Length: 419
Ligand code: NAD
Image (cartoon, rainbow, N blue to C red):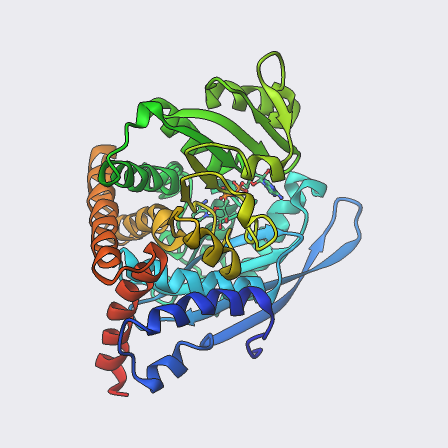
């Protein structure tokens, strides 16, 4: 087991919590408990490559807090994964689950790997190897992983299968985000974005705007980014820019994200759609476009003190985790930009993961209308609670979201420990 690291992403995440302590009375002992993760595991995963050589990959699983229920959080496969990043992500999961009031704490996992350089067989062996390495650290009542950047339902299926093999009994509730045929929930694949749509619709309503007149730019074109672009386009918003790791595209007219995905599937990048009215742009340019709504849906720390002053969007929906640094957040706040924080904006994913876990535990599977109705109820109620807190105390939506989450987490810690 390792101690918490002390560098920037994690500290940046905790600054968001510090801001909320001004508006809610939290006992010093509870602040201490919430200042560090409960435990962190670092593993070395030997994987037999197609060449016959064995390569060792480094992976992590962090348990931040389980006061409100089992640890919950995705597994990221990315070359930039670090203990600091996984810890920050597990911290955000703790507060996100409390914001939407589902009975989970916060955890997260990751492996340092560039999946684009691996074959399908190598990715399967790495996925199974990761679960073998962390198998005693997770469990359906203890810590339930899910997909994150560069992991997907197929990888979740290999991981759940591996856990069942190790424990000698199929255990679908060990992991969420599985394929529907293997215990997944209908509606999970685009749940993060569906939840984001309920939240942005609620924001547009309270701000008195007309969505048919609003332009949207989306950074990242994976599970979160592609689905939010598609859902918003289908719902009447004007999607004018999208991007992936190779760069972006922009049109002064709207375009259909499904057609852009067809091109990406054939060519490997959205940039291949830059023909006629659609122009190629960089990821940096996308963030600074003069649009109504900006939706970062890729990685952390995309808006920093260096570009925050150039952001022109009126609303930012943080579908990615931690896309705005704490310093940048203060600049955006001063500029009057309506920032909908990650711990609310992307909580649809973990909410439907909770639904999947409930369905796995009961063996009774819901239809899509039930999933959407229950998701909408939770997302709209959470937005309204946070929005009214933000008006009441004249604070940002982010601080209001932390205050709401803290009220729930501190009560759970107090009930268990009387600190
Ligand atoms: P994904 O792997 O499906 O997609 C990631 C996308 O980001 C890809 O299109 C990739 O090309 C793009 N990308 C990578 N590096 C980039 C860069 N430097 N600039 C621009 N684009 C880049 O991942 P995802 O599941 O969509 O996750 C994206 C974000 O959403 C992450 O912050 C993740 O933690 C968050 N999130 C995801 C879920 C979920 O259910 N998938 C839930 C909550 C939060």
